[in-house]
Amino acid sequence: MKKAFISVLAALLTATVLFAQTPEEVIARMDRETARFNTEGFSMVMDMKIPLLGTFPTQMYTLGKKYKAIIEVKGKKAFTWSDGVTDWDYDVSKNELTVTNATSSDAEDSMATLSGITDGYDVKFKKETADAWHILCTKSKTNTNKDDPKKMDLVVSKATYLPISHSVTIKGVTVTLRDFVIGVTEEEVTFDPSQYADAIIIDKR
Image (cartoon, rainbow, N blue to C red; front, top):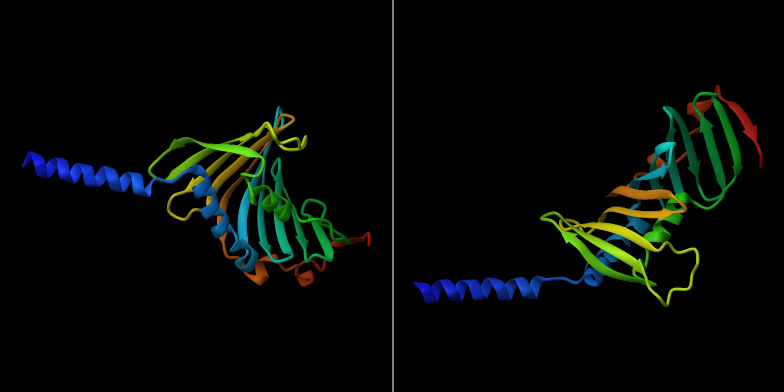
């Protein structure tokens, strides 16, 4: 009986070793999953935490070159749409719709932060729970890019290999990307002018 128990225990330990993953392997799998964002679209929340002012969340939806952002600051909401050519910014409190030539997508900038996250960073497991890997990314000594933050915190889901959250702090401001979901419809990211027919139009193109 004792020998059988030892044999089972040895088999379990062997299996644990075989299925153990390095942080680099987890991130590589995450990169493969987030590559689906390019074709299926994705949504996420971006929190910006500013000392003394608080945390300001932005809900974002992206599909291809199109995106929609819902920004909330001290109870006031604003909406932004872009199709890669034109940007529409709607101020709810003023009922003003500002139209401009498109600028770079905040969502695309955020995805650039997630893409190739190990480049220029040393990564290690900070902790591991039943549901997620917590990974600390520390700027490598060979990384001479002054704009790169010294460290980043990444949490990856064990169930989906999608990022649960990704946080960086630059000049006292902490930006956290969280609540990633794959799949966005065309309607969710397309500006519909008929919904804002009574708005004050400010065309800056």
